[in-house]
Length: 237
Image 1: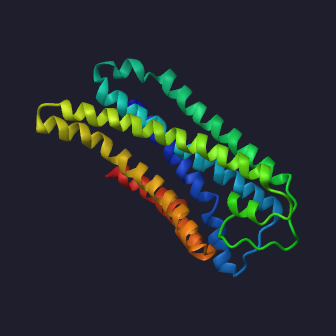
Image 2: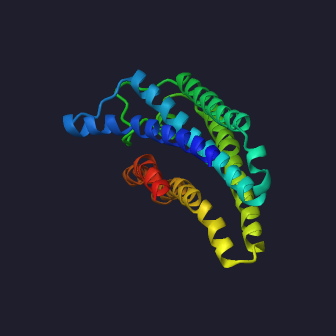
């Protein structure tokens, strides 16, 4: 269980920091009835928001690999998931998150914006910042789509592959009690993954279908506030 607890600690840290980048500012805006934010503050919020969102994504992928090894190779679990490998996987997750967040913010810094810009959102989101720029955003869009495909689609493919192998292994277990025990170790992680990707996909589909910035902002609350809040509850239960 030690590797899982180590990964859970990192996931909890990422979730706490993830909500801390948006919720305090949102509460201050509600309390003071002011929705203003400086340019520097907006860039900083966007950087940390991307950083911890990506780290969540990568850590969930590492946790899927951990469950894959635990169920498909139980006798070799402690050998494969040794402290050194766990540390390297987590370190790689944070490094990739830092580098991609830095790249996206540097791409935004090259854009010019009109004074007194109004963003129809409760946070400085990368997509909204790019859409409201007063200069050419072609290169920015290319980088965003490539990063989304590689750093979003890659981890999702890894999670789906891990669970396809897990399901095959569970089906091969002869006893019903054994199947239940094996599946119960994956249930919390599967619930968190479903919440994370389900809400993210819901935000994308709602914004694409309605073209309403207000409905998109409301849907964004699900994966920026609700999902990180539910993660520790799910794992505690």
